[in-house]
Image (tube, rainbow, N blue to C red; front, side, top):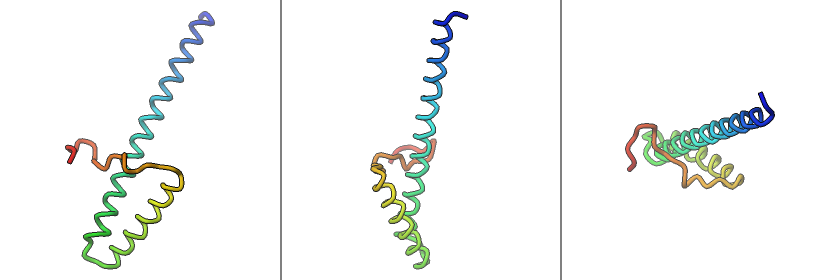
Length: 86
């Protein structure tokens, strides 16, 4: 193999790894958004007042930690794969 071929192959491998990392990040954000939406629902509608309080506390803590890291969770998906958008 020539140096040029090896360099091209390295670049393609690095691009492949970068794309995989972006896909993993998007998947993590989607699942985190879904979890936050479900916590929000529990905090508002759970029949058990203790469960509502616990869900609200966890939601507040997670939201604060995400804000501290500069995350904009409002743009994260809260839909499960295959769901139609609301």
